[in-house]
Every structure is written in structure tokens, then in C-alpha cells.
Image (cartoon, rainbow, N blue to C red; front, side, top):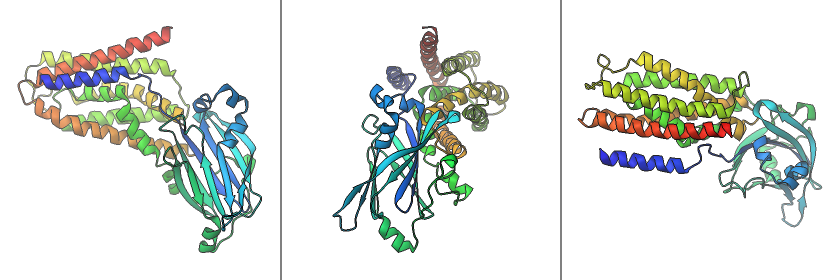
Length: 390
């Protein structure tokens, strides 16, 4: 048991060494439509990412964004290479997702044969930066992601249209319809949702790397509750943070992030104190519904109320990384990813705690872990309140 506590202390020290307000490398979103002799490109970037530019880059923002995509058109014999010139068609502020959207058009001199589209923005500065792309060619679409592992996408346009037996459209995207789907609304609503599927992994990553959320969830498990009670409590947490995640993303209710972060830390302290109080008061720890030391109804209500706060915390992450053009799909997949991460934590912790509570040292272990979690929550609380005051 002492060894388990020691490992947990090491984990908390590692968490303490990291920033409590973890910076997440931005996720940007791009829609590309290949026309008969030019390429329409809609780039959506969070304002937080734009703020990472140097002052010189900010002063030449349109040029910076335009040059962030390098479009080359090469003939099939690889003799002539045509660097396509980019120009801004329009710029649109998306206040609901705190992003800027740039409609760019890259004009190529020669007929399109072999396109090479390279993305350079943020790639060298952020190891985990990703730019998710939806590409439309002659009414057909594909998706891919730019990252440190992939900065260039090759398109054998001439070969593709010959194979498909189609021709490239000469119809360009209209400026005042910049927010319409890049493939001109020819795909189904289901496909629109699936285009945001990469947010699923972002959700999983955030819950697993969001140490305050993880400690809160572990704190909920540090009582001898039955699996049925745990499932009900986890469902309560899910329902609560799903509500405020949606409300905050759609800006129906906005709370200042620093205050919410401080309250999230307070929720960890509260759960830890409640665990210690209940565990010290009850000497008999039975894993069944009749003898549970706290009713699932009471624990569920407490979890729901604190879950509302955690939902606002999730929403700030989504706003920071950007939601692209399809907010509903991004929100859905991000939430599903969070739920999977939550279930993974429960799947790992519950069997271990279920075993521990059947041993004489189980109660002592739960109290020790609750104290450590409470101290970590208190550290974050003091840090975040201090941040508010200075």
C-alpha cells in the first residue's frame, strides 16, 4: 500500500511540474476546392494562434496567411513548374468560435496537371500542430491532415479526372457564401459530421492530459461504491459537462475562464474532503447498494453541479483549438472523445479500488490518496486565485 501511495505522489509531483494552464498546440481547419485553373481555399484559424505571430507577421497578416500555403502546378512530364499566385478574396470573423476565416484563391498559369499544396504555418513552432483539410475535386471529396509528419499533399489532377471521366468545374466559391460547405453542399449531413471526426481524438487527449479533470474523476472513485453507482455518477458528470460545453461553445452563457479554472480546483478539494470525512466516519466498507457510505443520489447531485463547471473548462479548450466550419460535428466528436477517455480512467481505476476495498488497508489507501488529491487541488486553487489577484 505504501508503494502505491509513493507512486501516486510521484505522479502528483510530475503534474505539479507542468503548467496548470496547459497550452495546447492549435488545430486549424482548411477547405480546398479545385477549379478548372485555380484553387479556392478557406482557412479557419483561432485568434489565439494568430496572436502567436511575430509583430511583423501580424502587420502583414494577409501576406503571412497567403504565403502559408505554397501551391505548385507541375506538368505531367515534370518539365514546367508553375508557382500559383495567391490572393485574398475575403476575410471573415467567426466570433462564435473566436476564429478568423480567410478565403484565398490561388491562380495558376497553366492548366492543372499535378498539384502540390504545402502548408507551413505553425508547423515549425508547434510539434503537435495539425491542420485538418477537406478537399473537393469535381464534386468528389477527401480528407487529410497536415502535421509535422506531413506538410505537402500531392494531387495528380489530370490523372484523376481522366480516371473518373469528369471535368473540373469552372465555378468558383462566392465571397458572400464563404461559410457554405467547400464542396458546394453536395454531401450529406452525415458526411458533414464525419468530416469532424478528428475532434474525437482531441477529446480523448484532453481528458487524459487534463490533470485537474482526471484527479476530480479519480476522487469520485475513492469510495466503496458499487459499479452501478459509479456508472450513475459518471453519467451525471457526462450530462452536466455536455450541457455547459454546448452552452458555452454556442455562447449562450459565457463565464470568465480564470474564475471557472479556480472553481474546478475547488471542486477537487471538496471531493477530497468529503471522501476523507466519509471514510473516517465509516469503518465498514461494503461494496453493495444496501451498505454504501453515501447514496448515489447525493453523490450524483454533487457530481452534476461540479460537472457543470468542468464543462465550461472543456469549452475553453475547444475555443482555443478552433472548431472549423462544422461546429456541431466538432462538438459531438470532441464530447464523445472526452467520454471515452473518462471510461478508460474508470476502467483502470475501479477494478483496482474494488480489490483494495476488500483488504484491510483499502480504507487507509483511499484516505491517503484523497489527501494527496486534496493537496494538489489546493495547490491549483491557490495558484489560480493568485493569478486572479495579480
